[in-house]
Length: 232
Image 1 (spheres, one colour):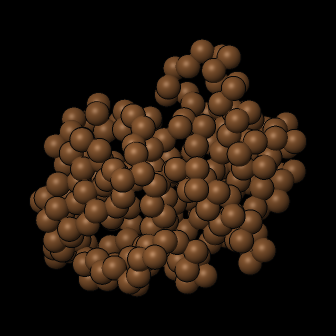
Image 2 (tube, helix red, strand yellow):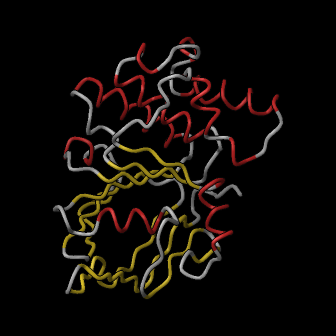
C-alpha cells in the first residue's frame, strides 16, 4: 500500500507498556499519544531506560502495548493476530540496527536477497529489487563484495539496501550510525535523507544530536513520555 504525503503512517493513542522486572513492575511507556506522518523523518532521543527501545519495538510490530492502540495505516498492532504482525514485519517495515547483521560468507547482493526470503518473489523480481536497492545506496559496483571487503559505512549501506529491497512503507533505525566514525556517519545520513526525499518514512532512535539535527522532526522520550522538541 502506497501512502500519500499527507497520510498518517502511525497513530498512537494512550499507549502504555509495563513489564515485570524481578519483584517490581516497570512502566516503560506511560500514556503516549503520537502521530507520525507518511514521508516524515523523525528522530527519537532520550536517556537510557527512557523507553526508546520499547517504543521502537511497538512501531516495528515486535511488541504490543499493555494498553492503547498503535495504528500502522489501518492495522492496529495492539489487536492484530500474530500472522498479521509477521506480515507487517515482512512487507511493510524495514529495520536497520547499530550492528550491521550481515552474513560474512555472503556477498552484498546475497545479503540483500536474504531480506526478500519471506516475500516469496520469483527470481527475476528478486534480482531486480536487489539491483535497485544496491543502486539506491550507491553500491551497485560492490554487489559481489563480502562484508569483510567493505568499510563500516558500506556495510551499513548494504544493511539499508536489505531493508528497502522489500519496498516497506516505513524504515525504523536503532542507532544506525553508532558504530561509525564521523565521516561514515554523514555518509549514512546522506543515504537516509535521500530515501526520505523519495518518500520513505524514517523513524530513527539516536543518542547523537548531530544525527537528530538532520531530521525534520525531533522527539524526546524520557520517563516513558514523549515530547516534541522541534518540527521543521
